[in-house]
Length: 410
Image (cartoon, rainbow, N blue to C red):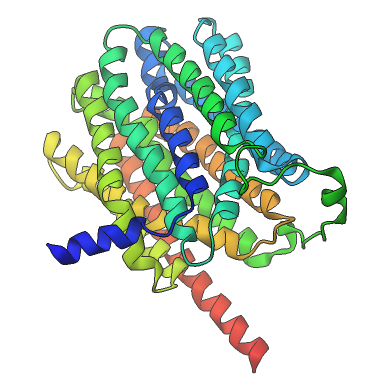
């Protein structure tokens, strides 16, 4: 028992105050994150659109996220991560309120695109902020703490979202919008440059004097990494699109039970990820850990075709996908940071957001259409196969990078 307590104590020790404040901002923000996970249910159950149209809306959200990632990365390197985060939270919160008032398909598509641009421009700035507030010894844990806040908020939002969705889907947009704005208020109160010494103030002269780092587009292994990130995201985003509808249509779960399963994912991450990352990060094998985590995530989809339908397979799948993402996703951010400098980190983080966003387009769009044409069983084989290919790809990258480094030092 003392050994376990020591692991948890060490896992949370040595992190900067700014890292904790930023994680609290994320907790508030994500506690209201109810729209995206319930968007397909909202469109199909409340507005009575078909699953294919719901998939189009989610794909449009992904397209906006691509633009938001590129824009957010560029603005982060030019204006500073604090200014981009603050603007994205305020404007994104206001846009959630707008989207919630729309019922016609084309206006929903247009407003969803704008919402995604604003919402996802936050990510590169946030990733850059975590790198600024951390050091090499605790960087993965800092990213993991941020994910803990996100997933604890996700657990709260998922559980409440299921209850609220059963009564009134429109309230989800109000809660999501107002928590975005609340997070912006806290960010300004505790992490503004004039209030926190770890947040650098935006300075045009300092920016002009900063040595420009190499372009991410010329980093061969990073571009390959982005391809595998797209494939990972393709699989992962089934969790928020086809899986909730699968649970509702094929397993006949109630919205409350679907929300509880989503909450289980967040609660497990909140309880165990920091300790798991603390034990794994010392091995300094980012790509190996990512590979294993991706393979476990692939199994989470394949089990739907190997077990009888019911609550047991739903819970097993959730446990597997949760373990997989705990092992893979924090180390993806660490891998990204190891290839950056202070002057190009926003660009690298922006491209990582783009990779996730492309997966967010392809995952919902292809997933929903595979379901309509071939059914869920084929979808789970396809997604599981893509996950296995991605796991092999991450391991191949590690071997190739090690060989190249050995050749250069020989």
